[in-house]
Image 1 (cartoon, rainbow, N blue to C red):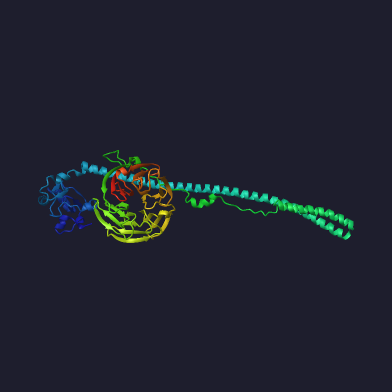
Image 2: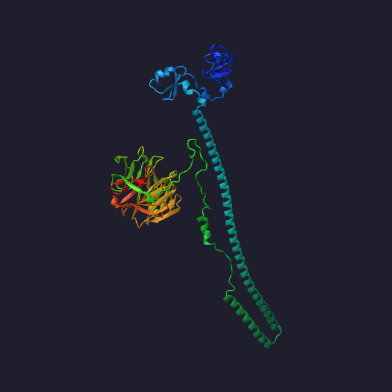
Length: 562
């Protein structure tokens, strides 16, 4: 602490070093015991309020730095200017506040300030703020506790699910093993019976061999002749027995094998996870009190999501494009519009007043474009037989990178450092911008020269069979809608802030909107509205504008109302 607070100011002025014991805020100095007595007795200072120096030093350092005198003129503050909300000395008033009307003496402004309504209200506000913060902290701590309980319960349920699966598989194994043993036992019994019959026949043959040996040694010719007839009958019977064994396939070799069900082949590949963890949020239970309005609470309004029936288009203006084959369009964050012209290999950037700003020449066919805001770059595809992606910096208008891909390439969108593009008959592809790898995401045939759109974690593309598909960024199908009953040769596709999908028909000269779940559609515009081969769409989610570019004629900007 500075000596200003620990040394008596009066004594220090007289070059005497005495410790201060009290502090006078009005005199703005500390006082020793002796000076304290004179201070209390003096007519000019006897009504000053003093505090123990030890208690005064407990004030925050920023309050201790507040003085009674003007730092500029070294004079005591006398006036408070309400216009500038600051204290002033006599010279400040003359120099700076001479034209201010609302000036009050410092004494009047600070009089009874500690017992004023403003001070009481400040105490109440701080008390409420402290209580609100405590309540919210406790609420968030309880949320952490509930999340931990949720996790524990889910772990138990997952374990129980695993046990049920194991039990079911154990039962299937038990049944299959029982069937295996039954088949083996039945076949063993059949073979054992055959072996018993063979052994009996073997004994008969041995007995005939013994008789024949004895006949050969001791019997007469007549006896031998007649014995041979008898043995011949037995031999014939045994030969017939062998023929029967072969004929009735009782000599076939039996073996046991097994063939697993087709479901078991599908199981490891189709079941990619046991379940899905769902994070659900709801309005919090914590409320915030407010002395001015006791009914104020923290809550989330229940705002209904607009449907396709709520879409209303208002024409904002017509845009004169450059070139005769506009294949793609997009918005820049500042409202400028970008159009790619396939036949002239150029990209035209238009100002917000729809005049030409500048032209880019990537050096290859300019089929489709998409703007990456983080890097301020424009992604450009090359269309049929060119197999390249160009990345152009919009700020310096220079080509930054060229990425070679393995297919023809049309519509393209950017999300999370990945480029998803229309590879035509080669399907939906994804390029990783970190390593340039190109992989097929979905083995489907897409319409040539058609766009791709993205919203949230979903992709939207147009199939060669005149349908629209919505899938997640892993390629898993969400929904598919046939278009051929209300739209022909779909080309442009874009999505608004509510997941509603807009599609343009190149041959049918119309634009339709599709519900977020793909279950419903509604016509918005037709040839009567000036659509002539509308080839590209782009939704400006910042300003709720829909840009529609015809292939050869003007483009249109519409305000989209909910």
